[in-house]
Structures are given as structure tokens and as C-alpha cells.
Image 1: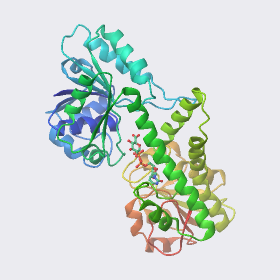
Image 2 (image 1 turned 45 degrees about the vertical axis):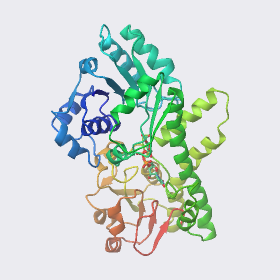
Image 3 (image 1 turned 30 degrees about the vertical axis):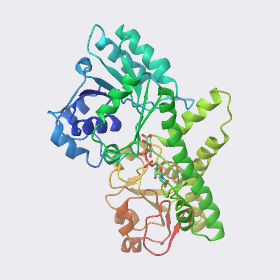
Image 4 (image 1 turned 45 degrees about the horizontal axis):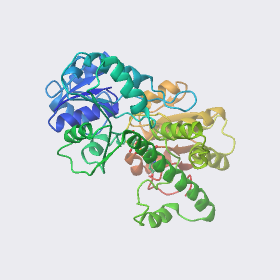
Length: 421
Ligand code: UGA
């Protein structure tokens, strides 16, 4: 099939590369000309495991990127993969979706070829029906187009693997034929396909992310109590997770969830619930536990070293999780903010995320390795679950005081204290 992918962010590029891998001819439409050049040169514009290999094989052949919408007219399906960032009030900003729909519609105007427009971006329930369909129809002047909503469940850093080995594929459509065309594009993947309406598909995505975020906040609240009682929360959640109704995943206690999805999607769901007259107490608590959690690191730190003024604090890990250079909503951000407010000198290290964090905190010291950050430090805060941190040991001897507090359970050395273990 011929597929267009609108948007060259992590969802768009991974979707495009994986569709090419499944044998389809794919065009990416991306406004950023620099990104287009990078993709066409076979280089991934973002770090994503396995993506470079796919781009090297398919870029310039089965997969071509460009800044124009022209290729949409020749394709069977277009997948909208643009961002839906949070607006000032927590609701999802749909302006990129609207712009993409107009451009798709304009290029399909006067055409005869059958085409299905598929929303992959995370959008509030009702968006496909109330915004996407009317906007594309108006811009195209056509009533013969198909529409579908096909949410993505890709974790950053593991997105290629998640795409090619999904737990499920959810396809919401307005008519069975459109849904059928979307399911054909996934032929070759071994996963159950769930067919539904577009609004239910949209809600499945929000409900999934909110439930995963809830598991994390729940685990952290249990962890905070376990720490007070001298119980190991990891042992507890292992026991809890063995229940098949719970599953062992997303029960790792720590500094809380970050990233471009969970915080944004839970906030959007809260906004949606309030707008419809509901009082989403549980969802608000999920966010509140997550807001407070990283600040516990500072409380423990102050208990251990006292006044932080002029103390050197090593921060290991800046990305919101391992395997990515993304620092959006990283739990390291509020921690560094609090350290700076207390007058501490921060020496930070991350294998990938230093350039991004430099934009947010140009005033702190960035190190090229953990040992450099730890040398002469009064304390160390570990913020990201990078596997390389699990091998640290002798490096902690370089510290002035060996106070090591981990916000993710990764260290194997002696003498560390966990945020809630
Ligand atoms: C998340 C979802 O996992 C994907 O299914 C979804 O498609 C994606 O959002 C999206 O909406 O696009 P992602 O944000 O890449 O993926 O990251 P996760 O791997 O889910 O981790 C999110 C945060 O939760 C990280 O900060 C991680 O450190 C934290 N986390 C995760 C925990 O604190 N404990 C856990 O047990 C698991």
C-alpha cells in the first residue's frame, strides 16, 4: 500500500520506518526541512533504538520525506502523527491537527483515488468525529473519504520494538471499510486487532496512559509508606504483580513519571472530565503524588547533609527515563530547581540528555562522566534508570561525603538510600 505519515516526530518517524519495513511505500510530510534532509540521508532525527537500522535500509527507497503534502494525493492512507501539546489550561492543543487536516483536504480536492485519513496522535474523545472529519471534508470538498482513529502505544526509546511487537492494535473507524483498510496496513504483525468506533479508540489511549500513570503513583505512595515501616516496596510490588489481574509491569517505585505523554495525557483527561461536570479525584491525586515525589529526594538530602548552600551535589541522570535524550517533564527538572533555590552547586551527568538540559539550566556544571560529577561532591542524587549506573561503585569513593540517594532503583553499590526504599 502507499502510506503518507504527517509529522516527523518520534511517533511519525517510527511509524513510517516500520510501515516501510512491512513493505509499504511511505512518504513522510514534515515542515522542518532540516529534519527532512536528515531522514532522507538515512539518519534518525531522534535517538530511538533500532530506528537507524530501518532508515539505513529504507530511506530514499521505500521511505521518502518531504515538506510538501503532494504525496498524500497518491497514497491510500494518511496517518496524522503531529503533536498535541498541552494548552495553558491542561487541555490538548489541537492546532497542529487542524492544520494537518486542512492541508490533507486541500491536496485531496478534486481527486478520485480512495483515501482514508487516520488519526494516530493522542486526541480527546470526539476529535476525529467533530474536528478531523468536518475539516478534511470541507477542505477537500469530498464525501467519499474514509476516516479512522488508530492510537499508538509506543514507548520512547523502545518504540520500534513496541510497533513491531504490539500487545494489541486498536482501530476505531466510522465505517467498516475504512477500518478494514487500516488493518491491512498492519498485515504481518502478530497481534490482536480490536475494532471500535473512533471516540472509543481515542478514549482507550487516554485511559491506558492514565492507568499506567496511576500504577506508578500508587506504587510510589505504597513505597513511601513502606519506607517508613522498613519494608522493601520492590518485594511488595513483586508479590502484588504476580497476580495476573495486576501484571508485574509499571510497578517500579521511584521519583515518579515524566515524559511527553503521561503528565500531558492525565492533565488532558482531568480537563476533559471537569469540562463534562465530573470531579476526577483519582486522576488529580495521580498528578499530585507525582508532583510531590521528586521533592522527597530534596527532603532526604537535607536530612542527610543539612544546609545545601554551596554544597556540591552530583545529579546522575537527566533524561525522563533511560534510552532517550528527552528531558520533557523529567523528574530531574524540579530536583535541580530545588537544589539551585537552596544555593547548591549542581554537577550533572547523563549519557544522552546533557545538550537538552543545558537549554533549561545553562548555569549548572555538566560533566562527561559520572566520576567527574561525583569527584568532591557532598552528595549524589540518581534520577534516571540508566543501566550504566548499575555498574558504578568505586566512583563513589571520589566523593567528599558518600551520601548517595537514588530516585530509581538501579545502583548495586553499598550504602545508598532509596527515595522510598
Ligand atoms: C508512554 C506509554 O508507556 C506508551 O505506551 C505510550 O504510547 C506513550 O507514553 C505515549 O503516549 O506516546 P513513554 O512516555 O515513552 O511511554 O514512557 P514510559 O516508558 O511509559 O515511562 C514514563 C515514565 O514513567 C518515565 O519517567 C519512567 O521512568 C516512569 N516509570 C515507568 C516509573 O516511574 N515506574 C515504572 O514502573 C514505569
